[in-house]
Amino acid sequence: MTDGTLEFAEKTGLFFEDDGYPRIAGRIFGLLLMSEASRSLNDIAARLRVSKASVSTDARLLERWDMVERVSRPGDRKIYYRIVPDLPYRIMEHRVERVRRMGRLMREARAAVPRGGPLKTRLSDFAAAYDQALVTMEKALRRVSQAVSASNGGSSSTE
Image (tube, rainbow, N blue to C red):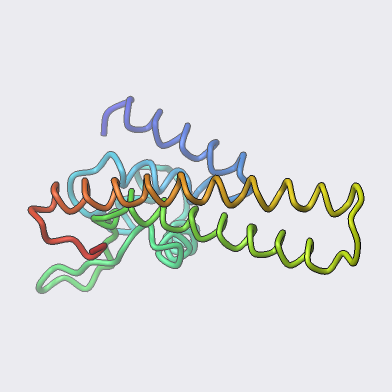
């Protein structure tokens, strides 16, 4: 593994940590993102110089987040991980859903306020902002879906 790959894995770990996620999960993600082939838990642990238990825990976390997937090799009992093929779409889809949920929450809060005034205005402003963000993000998501589909030769699970 090149120094650039290790450096990228470290930066990705810090990026994840800044968002409140485990640094090791980010490092694993960074390593796998820069890997052409799937990697075993042992290989990941050795390359990142962390315990196999840590790698196992955080790889399962990344798997639950739909960022990586387990793969097997014929005749090999080891667990291997790789980045999911349609990751750009999955990440954006997750973000769009979060914005959609927050917009609903803001509309519910606005509806719960019995009369106008500063609170109703604030909640209306938030609801409008989330609604507008959602429109823009959904357009971008459709474009990403088309790009992922095209790069997969027209056979994408995102269609």
